[in-house]
Length: 421
Image (cartoon, rainbow, N blue to C red):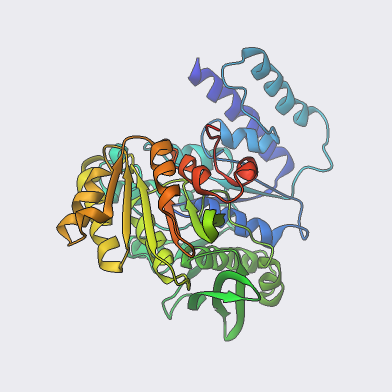
């Protein structure tokens, strides 16, 4: 039944793409896809009629639904699926004048062949690879297989298309070298076409944010993104800048539009906590790679308070489950985290890594459930503490954020998923 559903969605979605010929921007990578997508949207919005993937609509169902412009998946409701098919089919019958000029499609991969499948439905005019890491290693087996899978998005580029690639990621060195299409690289290395520099979390005009510089062909613009934390968002800005340049926009206009960029829920968003504390909400997902980035933000945010890390399980790491968790434990001790809270069975390995690296046992706390951890933490928070909360989507770490946020009644607007109230 599922294969039939996917087939029908694919046929209709491909036909819609062929009829309306929107410029497709395909975004893939092990980390940073959603932030890149949001940054690209902020740059292109208003100059073009743009639609972007909603939520985590980046698979065999979500991508066609985005192409249709249908907002919610019907799940197991057969009658609503019939309506979805009609909703898509009517775009082939009528001439929808408001159909987007540009589609920004996040393309995820849980198994081999996913990127080819999605980029075959909607061949990109611009293909973006954010970075390669061990996410979904459980299904791919090796990093080399992940690189091969993600690079399919470049192979399916249109003949006049652009590849936007991470020049700092050694895993992409061969992909960059072997790409015959037009390309724009981004990164902090000197040879990047769009170069990032002077990245720093700072406090300006009463707000915490990320300051950095973007440069291209000798031109340089200073940037400050309020309430946006971390170099990964500066990287997303660089990606959006590269896409804007490929779309014939100029650097100054791109920089101005990036001021509207807001990270998606659960991606290192700053939330006010109880007792005048600060929460770094990074609860959307987790890997050893993204955890190190988040820890760097925790340590470098200019606040005179204790630095507390709260981690849930990191899922889909396969053979790297134990070593990946331990690596995070070692990193947080070496970086100077004051207290560690871990939730779940896999996260015990984070605690083990922290102990092995010298963190005192009286500074490490383990809980089986998120609510218990949140209530316990709430009682111990002090003024000016900064609390990083992170875990894989399945760990549902937003419950911890809810328990310690200053305005829990805003949970529906701020948090990545529903919570128990």
